Length: 96
Image (cartoon, rainbow, N blue to C red):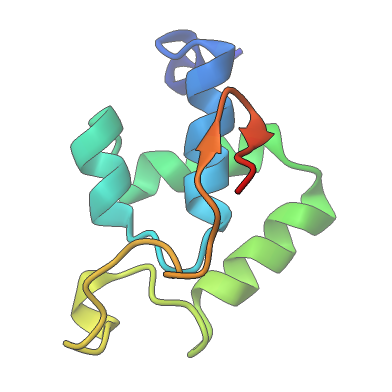
């Protein structure tokens, strides 16, 4: 276990990985919420994902599709999630 994973609960690790996978969630949001800079997020992802999953994630983050860096985002993007995305509470998708 690395230093990066020792300071987080399993729930926190799951949330960090989920945020890192989301295209619209910038690294700055992860830093704000978990005090984890981009380099540490990359280390955490490398340690916790299979090699092929990590490579796929890095390729996506470095592509033009991802908006993982605030500087690369279009100014009209002001949300971290899609407006059509359902709210999640207690690990269950909320019902209408």
